Image 1: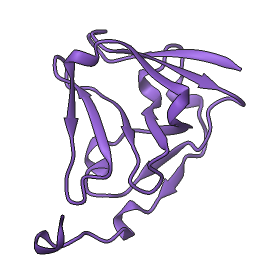
Image 2 (image 1 turned 60 degrees about the vertical axis):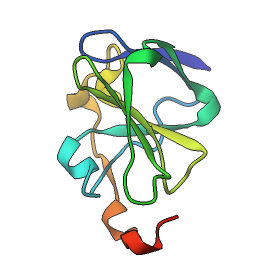
Image 3 (image 1 turned 30 degrees about the vertical axis):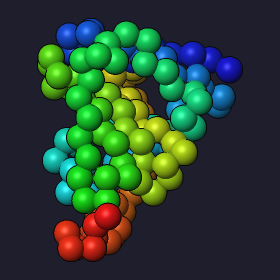
Length: 126
């Protein structure tokens, strides 16, 4: 297992990710939120990502079903990670936040069809 370090731009937030076989599940999502933030994400189970500094400056954004939980640094605005709606036992994390990652060398990036996930009408939300 290898542990890598990620930070937001201002370094107020730092997190560690335990990798078993390198970066897994690399992809972009086409949902209305992800397509706007444009991040390339990798995935891990919840127990393999830990915020080690700056949990107090992370801002949480949720919408619609409020199952997915998206975290951003409240100081510099960088998206660091999220808990997925499609797999609530996983975090997606922003590969650009990981020290030493050359985004140009990643190669082909998979696509998630988050846009196909149904939105729940406001009157049906819990």
